[in-house]
Image: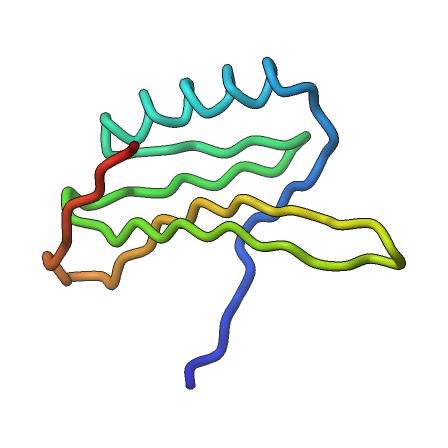
Length: 90
């Protein structure tokens, strides 16, 4: 297994409306095949190919008697790989 290097990471509490606005903005940038993440002086430019793998995951975890739920949306690709699949929402 290859070594994973974290190039950018952010985690912050936001209200749902702010998250929705951010995801809309992210979707617009994805459509342009390039996303620039900025936090303070840190900046990373990510070029997105036309074919990617979309991974969706919903998890539930018991945290000291409280249930923590997580929705993960992950977009991944291998450089030079053009395979992909279809996803629908219901």
